Image (cartoon, rainbow, N blue to C red; front, side, top):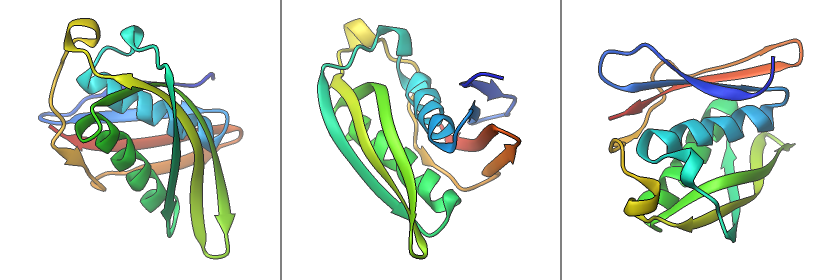
Length: 142
């Protein structure tokens, strides 16, 4: 199976499943799924390189902090992202995600506007690996 994301059934919120052949690809696709809730991914062509670094005690906290960083770039810095080059490492007892994203300023006329995200949640979060396939599932509060 190749990498990507899809939306799972949920009554009120966005339930996203993202997958890839590495944990980094699954996390990148989780970001794409998150952005696509608010804006049209197909219309985003990042022009500015933005460095990213987040930490977590485990993969769950790292995924939460990564999605929170993506969300903050959209809501605080008014930027959307199109390309992700990330690396996940374990340093002592913590996990660290470092890398960069290609971003551009949000332009509603270009990117559209779909739905507001209120926040990232830990509720029903899953991180799975079957063979070479990595999958993450999470819920965004809308």
